[in-house]
Length: 357
Image (tube, rainbow, N blue to C red; front, side, top):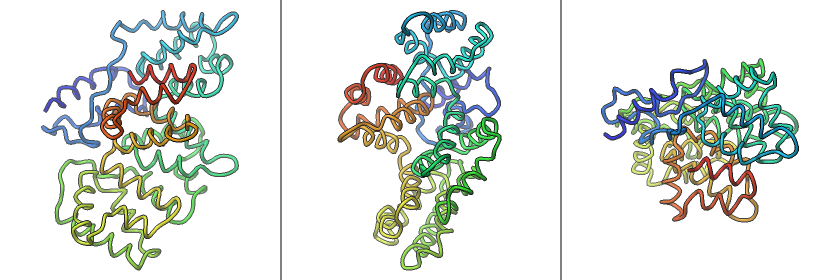
């Protein structure tokens, strides 16, 4: 029940200033009419409310300008301002900076910063939907296609987020995201991604037990032995049912077939299609747990995948980062910010750790 109060709270926070196509924290996406707060994704922690000391756009802009002028850059100030403002406040800072100094803040930071720190700082200056759109465009452009990134974004976002990403893509690149995805992917991967781009997942909170049984049977019939002709059932179910409904379907599947749906997918598919189906299943089972796993894998072992770290921390910052941190602690018995601290260094480390607090 505690959830309701926090939802209405995040609604009022920062929403007076919504630009078209923006993705508000998805706490806002939850219809307040559900007494138990069962919108999708469920059990959403309220977005972190930042800037308790009162946000002063003029002062931030002056400080940023000073940080980038003269000899050497004052990274500490840049980190402090970018990490302690909400996405909406950063939009105001960008507009004010341009009005005051006739220069784009992004261009100034591009020339002053470098490496992964620069990537993270620029990511924070975009709205989450714009940043996702840029990542998708980068994934499809040039040699070698980054399917993993397409899968990561399109299989994990809500309807509202996908619609905002499509609008941002059209606005930034003057092209349709759907036609680019169609042109750059093929076969069954293309089918599932195009289904997801329709953004017509059912996001109501109720579960239909009969439908779960029917879907489980359809998935079984589509998979076992006849794989290759019947992926339609998978697209239909995985792209359109609510996460709660899917959890009931996976249970029904387990009971009917005596096998976990993930095992079946692993046995019957391979490559990017397998990755997409597994991402959809894991997100439906535990959205925040999925991101906790991705963060953990991006750091464990030799070498750190900073791109994934930046992408997840920046895009989830005002959605469910608090919940992801709690899941991370629970699954890996260590704190996400401690692990980020020990696996990154320099200004990138300071910025990511600040975002996690």
